[in-house]
Image (cartoon, rainbow, N blue to C red; front, side, top):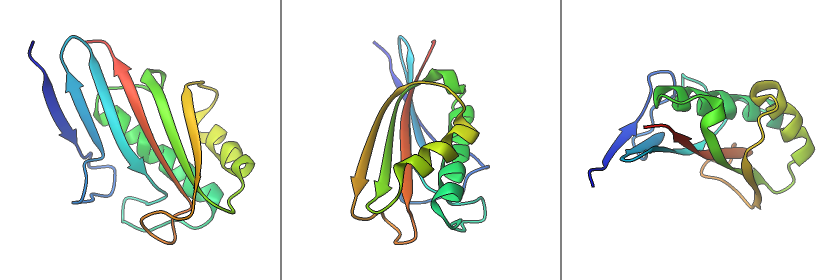
Length: 131
């Protein structure tokens, strides 16, 4: 069976040469694996505060999803990494402003740190889309 793997780095998200923002796998169906998104704006600046970082990370995730041909309803799994000491309730309140009420499988993990010491949150996701 034929399968295609496409790495996606949309123009609307800061480019990171160390990773692809998403990987689209096609075959019988399509799965989009989106790499962790942080509170980094298009210019590569880290926005400050958990609320602002959560909203920016989700906007980045939605941009990557759109570049892969998906819509929010296609997301089937999300993993949220929060730096210890961050308030999950603050992050969820901020997320609801961007994400709305779209239930999906989700894992939330408290971690001691992320790749940049200014990062407070990172969100990755998997989307399933029709062929």
